[in-house]
Image: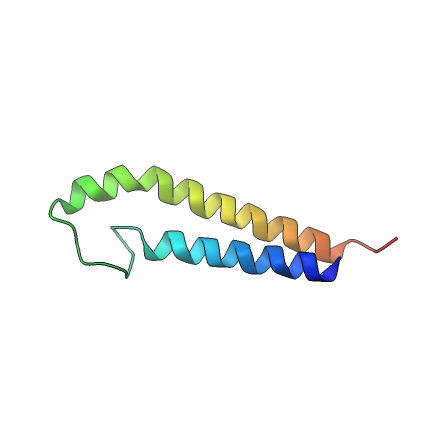
Length: 70
């Protein structure tokens, strides 16, 4: 159970970092697109949903770690 909990935490954290890095507004990967405002507005929903789902995966991993093995 411990290994799967840590795997979920790492996967969720990596997913959150991926969505943050590839965001046109605040990300670090890639140069600014030609239409910065349009690109940021179009990617906002995907970034928010991606980070929220990544946080959910981290939360499930923490929950798995806190459960007592049977």
